[in-house]
Length: 341
Image (tube, rainbow, N blue to C red; front, top):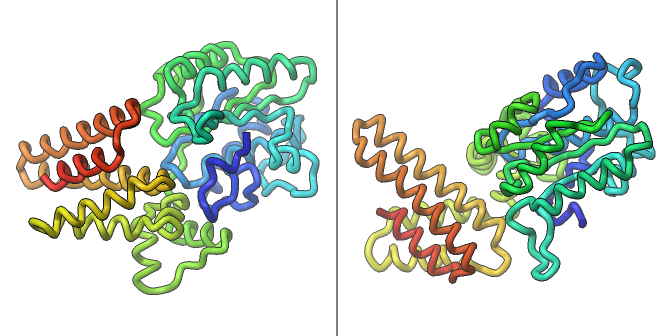
């Protein structure tokens, strides 16, 4: 499976990305832990989506395979050498010592599945069986573990409970609280923070996206919340326009509000709008959480509870719509009507 199916327009696949900004402390920790010879067999790399977790994981995998003896490994991580055999193999997905588990593509529809399935996790069993006699490090990157369905999560747990010799698991998570507690308990947590404005700007510049000064830069940096993927969705997918349209819909009344809802639903239900829809639903969730917080601070507990229940109801509607392949526009119109209150 091509790794590029998960890569946003304008981004670089983490396995090939030579740039990593803002996580120097995490890089130093991983290097020191490895060179000590006492590193944990499973590391849970936590943090919001799009801040560099996968890029860090692949950089560490390059480091380990380029320096298989911890005692002689340097005490810092470096950008992978593009001319080295290890880096080339990892970048092309041809390394026999690195397995990247992520959501697979459905062969019938050509679309990415909604979860990492147990069949994908079984690849890890074959991976370890085929490389058991090499004596090399075997590295599994689970990206992200939040996408494991229950059967897949239980299958990973069994491997983590009895890890093969010289194996390393890099478990990525945007929301570690949603993982099985037993998986979390078998991993060493490493928390990454959202990127600073400076690091985010440098990350975007490395991708050839230079933010202009003034309101555009200020708006993108504020809306991105330290995430490169959020910035790309704002800049390359029309995310900023969607947020503006949503705010206009909330402010409108009567026929103008209905027209605004239909325009927004039309855009979000388009055939190739999966990324934009996901972006909007995340924004809507954040909006409702913020409304609930403001209501609670203002002493209106009933309103806070209503917003909290509304967020849960919207998630349920989306789940049902996806499970039964319901008309997306009608589902969105129902959700937008609910959001208006």
